[in-house]
Image 1: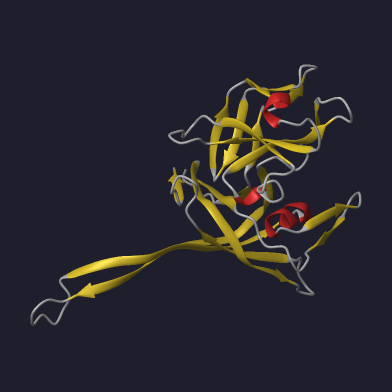
Image 2: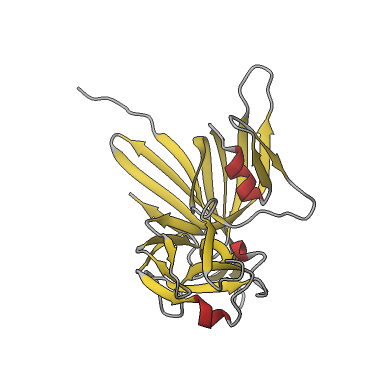
Length: 262
């Protein structure tokens, strides 16, 4: 007996952040210990090896806010290096657009000189965004034809302006995750909440994962780093709200654009 199984799809958006297992603890010596785990950086999951980072001597002054982060140093592709940003660092205010994963958002205890982790809330990289209804991924190139001598038809070409673009319709949406991707703010109100988008905010980069299972075979499409350039809410009187998202892919920190598995 044969049967046909329709594809079941999901959409997840990954921002730079914690994958699993990473945790930060502090000690009286002013150091911070980071446990083994994984983080997402530019659409790639990389490992963080347990290590200790000397906050007190490295920061120079033990005051103010600090973010501990993981990043890929030159030559690294699968194991991240630890670092930290103090409040006076230029990248401190907007690190989300850089090739780093924030794993701890804290500061120094008042008058103690000891780093205190305030929160890891919102630092998780994997964000369920919705259940896909329809989706497309378009890979396009422009090409210029070359003709030599008296040739009418081209005998050579040059490809340029490559682009990876796509659209997705989805349901079961998360207001907090929409706010994160659009660069807005989300205030929870218990069972619901409010997203606020101000005049100065812009979308942050994220990775889209589109997974489809048909006849027991799983295919996973990932656009490693992209931005949403259009978000549409279909407000129909007779249907549930079905938002649609457009995205444009750009190269991540290692030059990757897209992966296909399956």
